[in-house]
Amino acid sequence: MLTHVHGTLYALQVPIPYPMRFVTVLIDTARPVTLIDAALDTPEAQAAIESALGELGLHWERIERVIITHHHPDHYGLAGLIEERSGATVHMLDLDIARGERYWRMWEQWLAGHRRHFEDHGMRGELLTEMESESRRSRERVHPASRLLPLRQGERIELTGLPWEVLWLPGHADGHLGLWQADQRLLIAGDAILPRISPNVGLYAYTRPDPLGDYLSTLRTLHDLAPRRSVVGHYGPFLDDTRERAAELLAHHAERLDLCRAELCARPQHAFELSFAMFPRDLSASARRFALAETLAHVEYLRLHGELLREWQGHVWVYRATA
Ligand SMILES: [Zn+2]
Image (cartoon, rainbow, N blue to C red; front, top):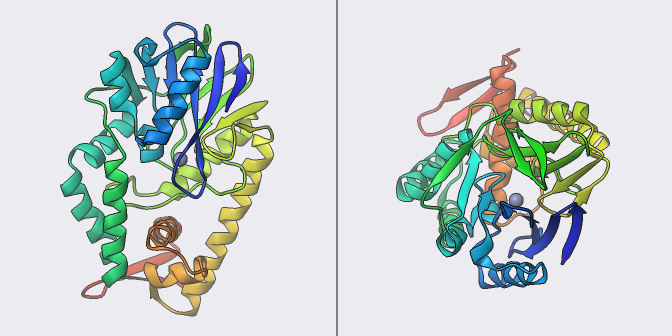
């Protein structure tokens, strides 16, 4: 379904086989014809984008530029295919290019590091194997671009015939990009802030050391920016109370940090064990991986702030309170 956003800009809800069910792809029909985010490489997503382009009097070959909010599979999947079909340039924030390239181009190496990272924090056995196959499935649904061009924080680009500022909104991904139109107070937010769910903020292999610290600053930035309207990656396309939602998510993470403190004051634990106190529901291997990464983001935040210590106990990192 196509929703009009502003001027020549439209938002399309593209189906993805994830619990969120849809990802937002934006289409700007003004020159250069631009797509923001590229869903996942599935026949359903390709068909949805093709039919929306048709509705707007466009086709694949007319796309001149693709901007990716972050390198995750559900936002980057079709970038390479669009590049091949149209010759469009593909852009990402400079900081996310290195991360994305390691992820998509040095895949086998990345996967070994990814597995080792979760093993070092207590994940074992079948769950580890399932998580690995899940990562392989995601990889198959991504067609990486042959060339990525960097955008930089603070840079201005033209979209909808207006100037938009490139924002750096790290946390959910190291180099997560936002686009801000100051006169309209309109934000293209990707997954930096979402209605209904708290965007996953996780410590993964090869990420910046303090993703939660990064994300809390992003939430403060969004709170102060106070957009009139944000276009979001999932459960959108619109979020109209970004300021309130940012405050809510700040409070949510403060509560989660308190839970970590209480659990680790009670007894030392490795992060995988702690993830069951943080996320007590029965989760699939893929969801448990997000739970462990998110737990790690919280304990590492506390460790970097001097509240926790971690000790290598022969085969796993164990966290304990300093006091
Ligand atoms: Zn997403």
